[in-house]
Image 1 (tube, rainbow, N blue to C red):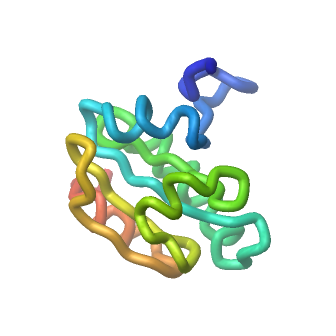
Image 2 (image 1 turned 45 degrees about the horizontal axis):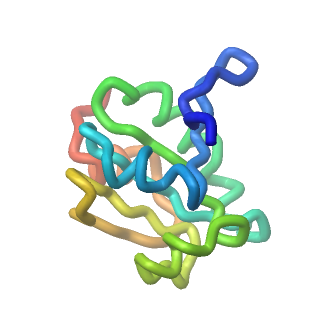
Length: 117
């Protein structure tokens, strides 16, 4: 399957699927913040623009990706995602932090452990 880093309409894609999760998240050299979300979730829809901005803004420090739990249930089940949105920070393939619910941009930046720029 093609890499999720492909340019689409001038922007990096931020979606990760069950097929690309291992490569993009678990084998990543950089920390990865994954937003587990669903299309029927109002809070998830509200957070989409924030996730995409963080993806662009912090791409040199942390990968910020979205994982649709309905279309890709394998890893949401594996990591016990029962509420959406759920935010899981991975480092070296391991879970180092997790939260659930809508969060502010500042809260997400704090969760990622990076300085606000």
